[in-house]
Length: 225
Image (cartoon, rainbow, N blue to C red):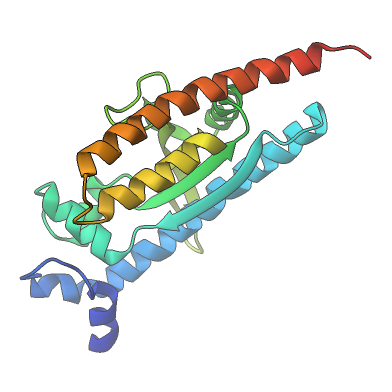
């Protein structure tokens, strides 16, 4: 591979003293990104089909939106080094579960669990880990259902199992997480502790609102005209 492309794949990291061997593995990194993009397509297609089927059966779409991302080289290198793993492409394959990520935004809390249950029942989905931050929120107030799954991608000469992190949350949870992310990665914020406390308070309010909105929805559904 051209040395310029190798550098481009690994540029703009905050890591110093990157081993020369990692640059030599740039071709393998390019494959890694390709395979993860393919895995995302597999997951997104499954979720879109589920949403279409449920829309036909229930006359509404439980999934509001689906988005995805593949971690950039900078994030991968920083995480690998932060966790103390070897800085190699093989190490990324073995030790990182969230290189490929899919985010699913649902209308109601119960939709999260319904969609997750149907998704995990599919024959070619292997569930590796479940982290329920809705029933057990993080200390800062973060809520979401996280699934680490393995799905096969079918290449010209083989099927390759790929790990994908799927995050499922409500619209309100997603809005909160987006703002919290900005605060987390913005350096030098005055009164950062006060802002964090306000965010946690908002998280509690959002959780209560999500539950109330679900109750209201059920009341509306039970009204017979």
